[in-house]
Image (cartoon, rainbow, N blue to C red):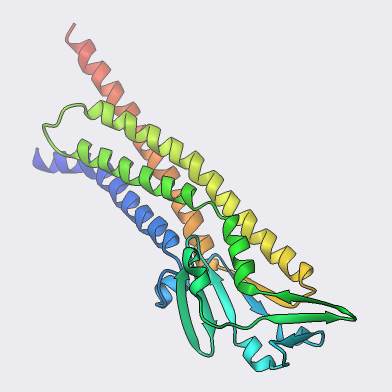
Length: 249
C-alpha cells in the first residue's frame, strides 16, 4: 500500500522538480549581470562592443587608441549590466549607471559633422525595451504554482481539487505570459543585432546571449510541460471521483 501511494505521487514530484528548475532558470535570467562571476555575467541578453576594423572615421576620446577600444564591451541583462574594460569586469544596476567610472567614447568625424557613440547609453536604451516586470510576474506565478503542488502533496490537507485547478490556471496564465515575454525578449535581441550595426555604420559589434536565450525557451517549455501534466492529473482525478460517486448509488 505504501509503495502504491508513493507511485501515485510520482507525477506530482516530477511537476514540483520541473517547477523548481524553472524557478532556478528564471531567477538566473533576472539576476543576469548581477555579479562579475561568470555564472551571472555570462548570462547576458546581448553584448555591445566597438568594431576595431571600422575605426578610420573615429577618434577615441581625442585619440585613436584602437587597442583600448577593442578591449571595451558591455553585457546587458534585465536589471543589470557588466562593463569589460582593461581586463576588468564591473557589474552594476541600471539605476546606478551615473556612478560608473571612466569608460571610452568614440567621436565619429564626417567633414564638419561630429557625433559621439556611447555604448553605456546605448545599453540603457536597449534595457528600456526589456520588460523585466513580465519576467518577475512569471517567476511569482511559478512559485505560486509550486506552492499549490506542495499543498496537494501534503496528506490530510483539505481543498486538494481546488489547489489542482488553481495550479493549472496559474500555469496556463504563466504559459501565455512568459510565451509573450520570451517572444518580446527574442525580438528585442534580434532587432538590436540587426539595427545597431547598421545605424552605427558598423562601428559596433553585437553579440547575442546564447545562454540567456536557451534559459528563456527552456523555462517556457517547462511551464508548458507542467501545465499539461497537471491538467492530465486533474482530469484523471475528476474521473476517479465521478466513478467513486457513481458506485455509491
